[in-house]
Amino acid sequence: MSNTEFEQEEWLFEIKPKNNFFSLNLKEVWQYRDLLLLFVNRDIVTVYKQTVLGPLWYLIQPLFTSIIFTIIFNNVAGIQTGSIPPFLFNLAGIMVWNYFTSCLNDTSDTFKKNASIFGKVYFPRIIVPLSIVVSNLVKFGIQFLIFVAFYIYYVFNGMELQLSSITLFFPLLVVLMGFLGLGLGMIISSLVTKYRDLSFLVGFGVQLLMYLSAVMYPMALLKEKLPSFGWLIEYNPLAYIVETSRYLLLKEGTISGFGMLYTVVITFVIVVVGLLIFNKTEKSFIDTV
Image (tube, rainbow, N blue to C red; front, side, top):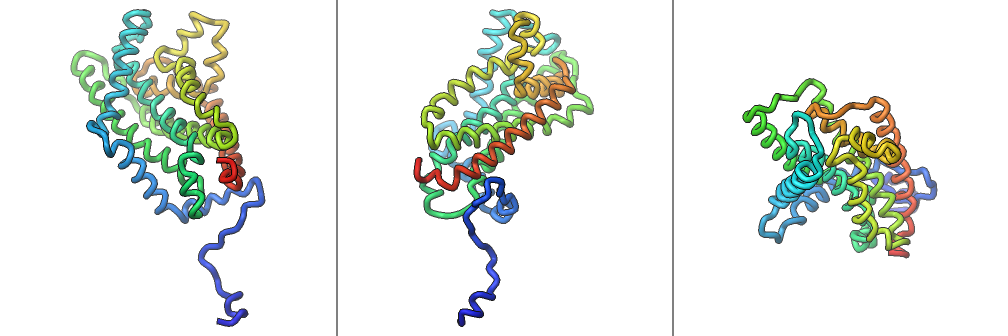
């Protein structure tokens, strides 16, 4: 082949360095969609591959957590949940919260856990955290089925059916929670390449954040009992998602139009900032990990 013919040949893909901070090239993610599905399958299959109980761990964790919360916060502390059984109230909040924490914790170690792969072969790095968010939907789906099973049980035992047309908006809240976990996870993952201490603070910080996200109590309760600290929950987008999720599923709590608009805006900003920082870090992370 002559040099002229070589220069005129059209290439299917062309890999170039990303010199522009705002060059995200999200179209490339669609071109690698098959790889995304492979990563999703890997995440689902390998997590509990060599465990005795396997996927049953998806069920054990929310059930035992809900039982403990019911005993401590409802029976001992006396937190009221209206006409909704306390166990079902806690299970609804924990189910949604677990999806966020799974997305956040798993994506926050993206560069560190996948350094060997990233250093050998090229593909859009954003595919790895995206696959984590998608694969965690399977875990969420299993926990949601458990919630539905207990919901049906309580309905047959006298609880009033709380479903309505607005319940159909619940999947949108799940997607919003996933994107929030994705955005925060990408930011933390990028920072961990230089500041390893952050990886130790994530687990601790998530546990503290749970108490400020209305997972085990209604938002109105904190504002009533501790009005001077009410701003801590009012400016927490996670609290609005958890509270709204419980309202859509159980008609318990309230829906704040301003709160949800605030949550959508904050989530959008965090995802965009996460993408930009992630995009910048992937160029040079291999020298610091």
